[in-house]
Image (cartoon, rainbow, N blue to C red; front, side):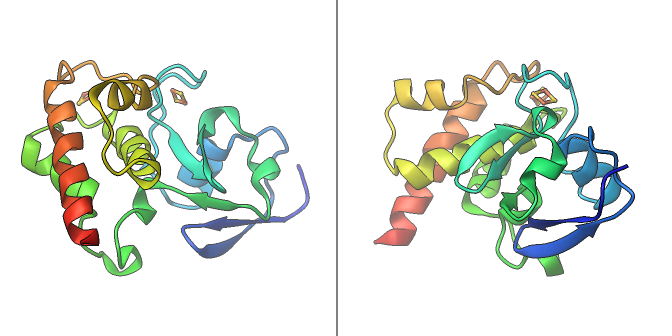
Length: 164
Ligand code: FES
Ligand code: FES
C-alpha cells in the first residue's frame, strides 16, 4: 500500500486511498476513478490504446506509475469534449472520427483521439507525413487507417475554421 495521494484528472482533483505503489496510471484511472475511456490492450507500451496527456506530454498510461502522476495534470479521452462532466458534446476530433466512419471496434479510438488532439494543438495544418508519424504509436487492427487519416483531415479543417 502507498499513502493517499492526489491526482488531478480532467481538471478535477481525486484522492487515491489504499492504492498499491506499483499500480499503473491506467489501472487507477479505470479501476479506482471510474474513467474507463483509456483502454488496456497490451499493457506494455506497444499499442497506444491507453494514451493520456500528462501535463503537456502524451504518455502510455500503462507505463506510468499512478503515484508518479501525483499533483500533475492528467487529461484523458473523457476530458477532450467541452462540458464533459455533464455529458457534454463531442470535440472536433471526436466528431471527425464519427463523420469519417473511423471507428470500428473502437478499442484504438481513445488513444488515437488523444494523439490527434495533441497533434492539432501543436500543428494546425499537418502534412501527411506528420500525421502518420503522430499516430504511429497507435495501433488499429480494424480500419486500415484510411478513414482515420480522413478523420484527421476533417478535424484539422474544423479546428482551423473554428479559429478564423
Ligand atoms: S495498453 Fe498501454 S500501450 Fe497498450
Ligand atoms: S477500430 Fe478496432 S482497433 Fe481500431
